Image (tube, rainbow, N blue to C red; front, top):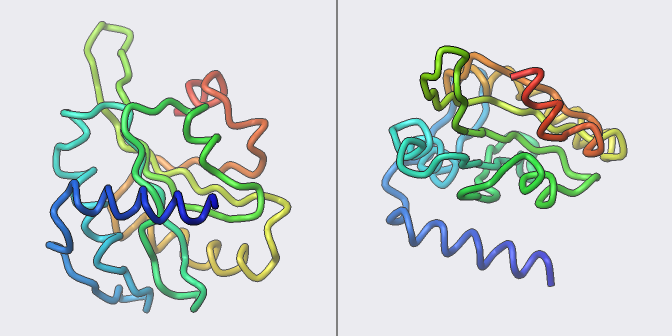
Length: 163
């Protein structure tokens, strides 16, 4: 039932953003970026984050071990909301755009790459996602990378201290 709900959510997100305008491609390192993943990353990087603060784009490596796929899009979400969507056996790449008030009062909307690699994930999945972690970060030009191994540690307080 959870998988069915996730598929419905994915289809709704795809419809919301207009289908497959950005195409599939292969990186220099050999990773295949699906059209859906490319499109969603283009959306979060191209200013949508300013219109919808606290947005997360969750990606995963497909069963073939080399294709980056779109998993979920979360609007108006905080760190706790992201953790509710993650399972403790599935590694994920999370791109999180959020509002951050700077010490001088300015508002920034940084984009952070969060690599979620749960300790309880199957070793093969961990190896596949670890293999592509730097490629994903480099491909989408994200400077700040955070690694999370345990969902209990992934709190708003912890995130604020490392981001």
